[in-house]
Length: 110
Ligand SMILES: N=c1c2ncn([C@@H]3O[C@H](COP(=O)(O)OP(=O)(O)OP(=O)(O)O)[C@@H](O)[C@H]3O)c2ncn1[C@@H]1O[C@H](COP(=O)(O)O)[C@@H](O)[C@H]1O
Image (tube, rainbow, N blue to C red):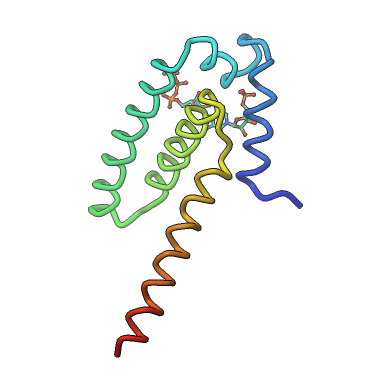
């Protein structure tokens, strides 16, 4: 079974050819990169506010919801630029591998 990000990446690809009236993602592509980035900024602000509220209320449900909105809109921005979610996972994996190498090197120095 395909993972969530791969499935979402496939849907975002398909929505590039969809009609804006029927699809939120297609409507964002039609409005262009500036509108998509505006949504990324809005969702980032909403995530920050929800995280601050969560610290007080000790309820993380809103911050999880807003983070999903933020991740989603960053993926739409990447899709608009021709990139898939896997490219970000690959970059994170590369950093993970690098830190693994550094950890081994520091152990070898001791
Ligand atoms: N994951 C999401 C997703 N997360 C958030 N959103 C939408 O993102 C918007 C969030 O913006 P806001 O909270 O500011 O709400 P809003 O007032 O409606 O937004 P604006 O009018 O300001 O643009 C809402 O309209 C949500 O419905 C999403 N819309 C779609 N998806 C995925 O994308 C797929 C394709 O969607 P369509 O293109 O609509 O078919 C879907 O199957 C889902 O898997």
